[in-house]
Image (cartoon, rainbow, N blue to C red; front, side, top):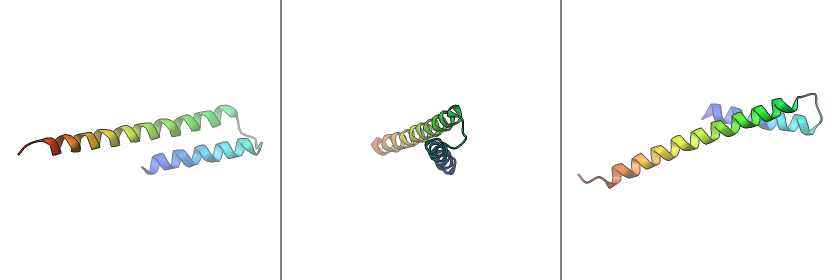
Length: 62
């Protein structure tokens, strides 16, 4: 989770730097934004699988 947060913060910082016309390459901004997006999607998929597994266990009869 901290890695996802760090990726999101790096993406925000790069975007702000680009908006302020600081010396940063556009491709760096796009790469950090995509890394943040992919890490968030992966985290959400893991969460969804965990919830699905929990729900499946709750449906089991003892």
